[in-house]
Length: 135
Image (cartoon, rainbow, N blue to C red; front, side, top):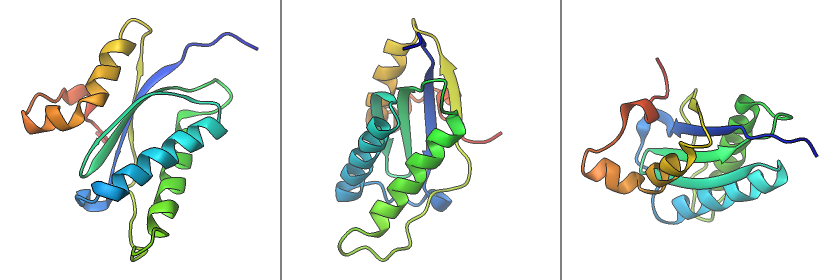
């Protein structure tokens, strides 16, 4: 196996920033992302979300692009959420995403940041650099 250390912080949002990532939808989202990551041989270090967007700290092997990874996560999760019991089938993600490469040394800091999304958003301690989805 080849040696690689390619770490990223990825963020994307619900369509029109609708506050839908709560309760069972949030739990479903996390489960789907972890399962898809395992299928793609990705390493999830942390997932965190607030009601309208999700953050992931992960390592992606060089055989898969960041855009392909996000496409899998968004597609699989929207399908699963739309097919949940009681769902109306209208869930969708906003176009685009934000991705930042992170160093091995910064990875622990980013993991903490991702895990504490709810705290950061409630006390306005978010880091603009890690919150960008588009220019």
